[in-house]
Length: 95
Image 1 (cartoon, one colour):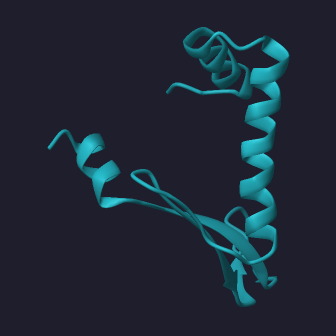
Image 2 (tube, one colour; image 1 turned 45 degrees about the vertical axis):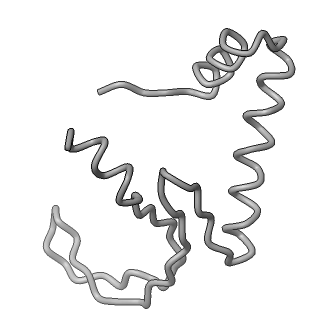
Image 3 (cartoon, one colour; image 1 turned 180 degrees about the horizontal axis):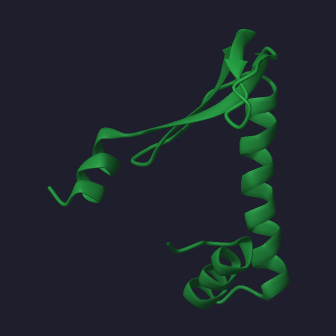
């Protein structure tokens, strides 16, 4: 499994566009911060040709501790969700 870090993304920007390391790191931070702030404010983030990030609200429910089998309450929470675009799915599946 490949892990792409912020450093990898910044290096790609630096190599492709001749940016300084500092500028490429700033760009990556700005992009992620914009996505993060939009999601925090309940807005969906659609990246054309890639997919959509959404925040889903999950209700509280009863779960089970997998180790002991004892029932436990799983609290209500908000979770980030990603739905790939049709174009992205086609590229990944090789069609």
